[in-house]
Length: 117
Image (cartoon, rainbow, N blue to C red):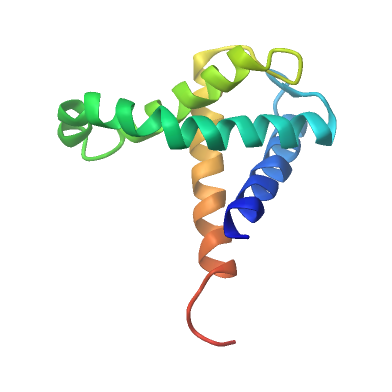
């Protein structure tokens, strides 16, 4: 249930961020859901390998290189789903990855907090 909620949250973030940036295009909400699903699959399969391979530079940059890995995952998603999501440059992918990471951190802390409200 939590994984599906994460996919839907990322889809909503895709649509919202595509409205803010001209260099980031998403083809409707259905395209955003498909892109979010593929991004989740890539994050499960490819991202751990990339994080292990880039561990020395990630340690040297105190973890900030993780945003670059996230941007690479977005670019890879855009490569596989060119009809649904287009990112015009790596700088845009890096900015989108940063904003999505921050938004996911805030949303997850609100939705999945352990303490009762």
